[in-house]
Length: 104
View 1: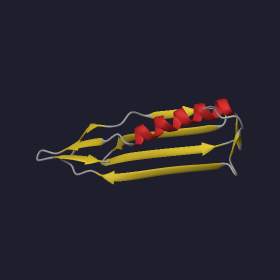
View 2 (view 1 turned 90 degrees about the vertical axis):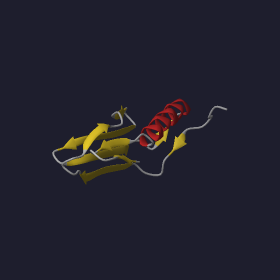
View 3 (view 1 turned 30 degrees about the vertical axis):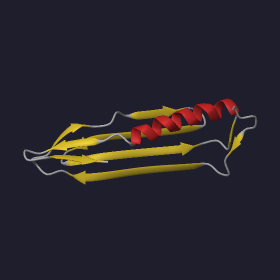
View 4 (view 1 turned 60 degrees about the vertical axis):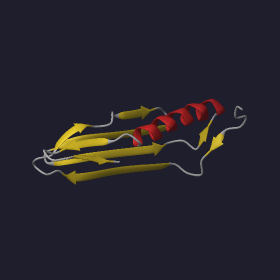
């Protein structure tokens, strides 16, 4: 079914997160999830992993800049949310000489 009326938020919002995990010297990052970067006039979302020296770094930011979304904009937003949700489920893989670690 398609939405007939606009989707309305009560307020705009913005969230920025950064998490750093110190890696042991013998740890190697084998795999990181791809960067997700969604931008349009009404909302933005970015998620990325990387290495900064001895740290594994996770950054996540999102913002809603509008209070109302047309039915068409709402469908696009739902599709983008699915993409975001799937990206969050992907794993970081770190190896050592002795074992494999997964952060999820």
